[in-house]
Picture 1 (cartoon, rainbow, N blue to C red):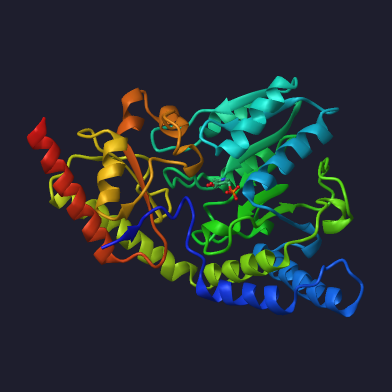
Picture 2 (picture 1 turned 90 degrees about the horizontal axis):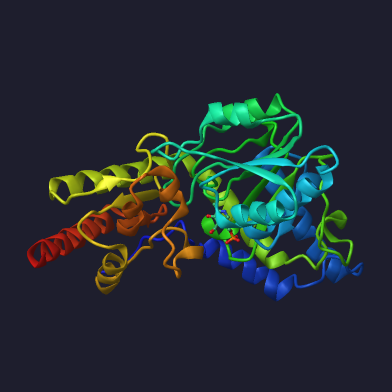
Length: 380
Ligand SMILES: Cc1ncc(COP(=O)(O)O)c(C=O)c1O
């Protein structure tokens, strides 16, 4: 049996998405900036996608910028707001458990003379709200907090964060990459100034993302060239990918509740079955304030590299944490921020699922983990 359990890294592209994209590649291939009919035909699909994405988030089409993915969206929002607001203040706030496409940007800004406060998290991975209140100052211009963590699935108290930041001078950016398809996101419910998503985490293609920027938010846009995306992101729009992103977003939203119930059931089944099999483990993160699609587990009896290799040999594809750092030996910065035990990250595995994951797959994973545990118990 083969089990893909690395959906937080990327998801398979849905067949409906491929069909829509192929149609654009084959038939509506024009440059949406060309003024002849083939170009205008492609523009129709681009405009329609923008309207659909805007409607999904409850915002205006003009507030949607199509990008190459969340890394670009995060870079553009964070640097763009920080540079544009620098005359008002050079203090920025983020958390210690953000994705590297956020953290590395803040580190760069620090080198350029900004001051950054990195908020702590508790052992469930929840940002310390009191620390956020205390950290906000007159000269704080930007706060960036992720909605759902990509390694542990913890959902941040975004309404509280939003309300706290709204009382300050700062603007709020949200990396909502792992929230799409798991939480309803109506941006009108918040005061969010900018929000990033990427298509490949919810059944869309890689290399396609969105940056929402609230109207009149001061942002310095750095990519120069043509006048695409109303001069905010130069470069010919990738219409097939954008149409694919839009279709994937529509599908993810259509079945949100059913998918959530299904994924939560799988998560519970996973935990209960491991307990029944008497495998020693602990959950990294929260069982309640989390999405169903990510289960991060600490196995004290085995190191992560060995576990990943043995699972791979059993046809189970998982990772130790963020895919972007999976190739490196640096222990997870997320688990390091949550636990004092430095060793924990070296024994922790992230399993992540999508709506097509099945109970049978979960049972197979727990059976293989059980076998690995017994093999190691005997060898030790
Ligand atoms: C929370 C989070 N933010 C940002 C990214 C980066 O997205 P992309 O791969 O589209 O650049 C990812 C994906 O790894 C992610 O999980």
